[in-house]
Amino acid sequence: MNDTVLIAVTSIVGTVAVYIGARKINKRYPYPLTLPILISSMLIVLVLVTFQIPYETYHIGGQWIEKLLGPAVVALAVPLYKQRKILKAYLISLLAGTIVGSIVGISSGLLFTYWAKFDKEIIHSVIPKSVTTPVAIKIIDSIGGNPTLTSILVIIAGMSGSILYTNLYKLLKITHPIARGVGMGSSSHAIGTAQMVDDSEQETVISTVAMTISAIVVSVLAPIVVAFLS
Amino acid sequence: MYIIYLSLQISILYIFYVIGTWIQEALHLSIPGSIIGMLLLFLLLSMKIVKKEWVELGSSLLVRHLPLLFLPIIVGIINYFDLFAGKGLLLIVITIFSTILVMTSSGLVSQWTGRRVEKNRE
Image (cartoon, rainbow over all chains, first blue to last red; front, side, top):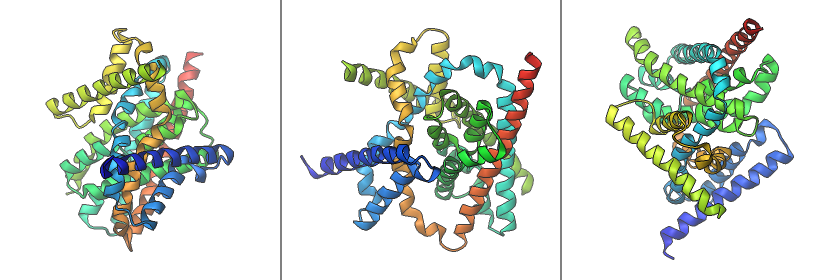
């Protein structure tokens, strides 16, 4: 076996093992801060930093895991199909929540960065942070900004929503499955949707649809808002 | 047998992903190929051209472990730690706060409209 294959196998097996371990910890201690995605990514980062392994080396194997992401998003069509009646019944509530969320996301990002006196490139980079990475980068292409910064903010939006939603929903008494899915999909896109998988199929589906609608709404609104401001 | 079924089904899903990407590029759409592939598969399932049983096994495995598939991308942050030194830290706080606002507003609006839908139906 040559080196590349060995590195690839090690990082794939390592990642899967860390993830399985993290799930076990989360089952035993089910708190937001033991979220498998959080502890496993932190552990992998720690290992890479400690042993001074460049990300590019880890990614030789990591890219194979990433390759399954495309078909996994396609796979969401099956729960979507199973829950199609619910979607039809609550279409209005889905649209209303997602559109309001998109507007709040764009305007709060703009307002806070403007207040903090960031320059224009950074302000633009914050605008699409609530939508899934490939769409966010396309939006940056059209409005200008820093695509690397945007993809990191997208991950932070996804991770923070995943960590906070349980307590936030409890605090705000958001109990309706439609509302729980819409809140997650609109604010934390696919990373957030992935967290609902263990909760309920219905919420996962609603979140999937919400992240899709929100991607469309933000792609349409962002260039308009930017044109209006400049 | 399980492994063979699973690989076949994941291959079917992969084909939809490739077709979705192809459609995206051909029509210059901003929606990613994976989401187009998902909508396409949903359409074919609704029209009963594709049977649920053909993809159910692979789909449930991939969907159940979605968080795992995001790990390599998230770990990529490692190359950009310096981006958040100093004032950059404020950007993280802004992003988290804005995320909370989006979750709150969209959640509350759809809860309120959802309950109205139910009331009207009664």
